Structures are given as C-alpha cells and as structure tokens.
Amino acid sequence: MGNPWEIDALHMAIRLFLAMVLGGLVGWEREQSNRAAGFRTHILVCIGSALLMLLSIYGFSDFAEEINVRIDPARMAAQVITGIGFLGAGVIIYNGLSITGLTTAASLWVVAAIGLSIGAGFYFAASLCTALVLFNLMVLNKVEKRLFRAKKLHVIKIKTEDKPGNLGEITEVLKMHNTEIRRLTTEHIPNEGSSAPIFQIAFTVRLPAELPLVELIEKLRKMPGVLELNVDQVAWTGKNGERMRSE
Image (cartoon, rainbow, N blue to C red; front, side, top):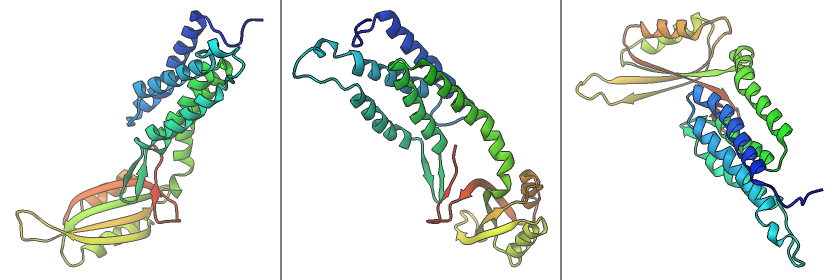
C-alpha cells in the first residue's frame, strides 16, 4: 500500500481538472440564470477548494514522520468552509425589505464543498453532489414555481398622478381579479420640471393561481394617470417584516 501522505502529479491534475468540470457545471446554470456569481466564479471556487484540500493532505508530507508534528487535513478544509461565507455574502443583495441572491450564495458554498471532496479523493460523492445540485437548480426550481406560485407575494409599485380617486380605482382593479392585498404604503415623490405632484403606491399582494401576472400588469399600466409600474416577487417571512427571495 502506498504512502497515504503522497500523491503523484497525474492524480493531482485529475483532481484539479475534475474540480474545474464539476464547478463549471454548477456555474453554467447560474450563468444561464444571469446571477451575480456565474461560470468562472464557481470554477475558481471549486478549483481553489480542491487545491487547498490537496495542500492540506499532501503539502506537508515531509513532516508526517516527525515525532512532534501531527497532521490534520481537516483543519484547512474547515477554514475554507468558513471563508467561503464572505464570498457568498457578496452575492446577497439587501434592497429595502427584499433579500436576493440566497440560492447563488448557497451554490458557492456547495461548490466549495465539492472542491474539497475532490481534493480528498471522494470522486463519487463529489459527482453525485454535483448532479443533485443541478437537479435542485434546474428541475426543482420549476417545480417550486409551479407548486408555490400562489403562496408568493408580489410588490407592485405604481407611480401615478396625485388625483382624487386614483388609489380607489387601482385597488378596485386588484380586488376585481381576486387579488389579496396584504400591505399598502403611499408616499409623495418630487416631480422635477412640473408642479403636478406624483403619488407612489406600493401594494404587497398575493395573486390567485389562475391569474397571469402579465395580464394584471397590462391592465394596471393602461389605467388613466399611471406613469410607471414595477413588480418584484418576494416571499413573506412573517418574522421581522423582511421579505426574502432566493436566486
């Protein structure tokens, strides 16, 4: 049986190349979904994790036989898992009450774990994990949208002229389509170049499963006095008033 603290150049190259391939597969899906961390980022994270695992196991083989030296390959792996959290935090965007990028941050963390597994020689576990991650990102994403669409909340922001009855008319259109209004906020915003005031209304709503969002947006957009309309999909947490969206 060979020395467990030594590895030849061929097997080292195979592990790094496999890390590039598996990390690239996950990164390709994120790139196709136009996420902040995409193809190259996931490859770099996976290769870097694999290299650090290789370094942790085999990089100090010259000291393995020393009496006062104890080699623990898990130490550097633990630091990688901790450190990748800082990179994941960079793709999480907090915008008002909305949080996006959670799934991409999780994919970076999983890719780091895949790289560590490859560096340690767990090819089957790393390959199976990659397949499961891709299944989750590509297949379960569609299942989630189909099954949980009715539970999602949408924030509809409408800029409209500040005229009597505008708020009531918009609310009536939403209720006419069986839209559940969970929250309503209004504010006056400055209108540069004009003395006419502008009113911004933000509705947090839950749409019925049978109502296409595009159809509702089109009807609201054509209403008299509506100047601008923005829609954002979120999921209500119900704890601190924050709304989180995983991407």
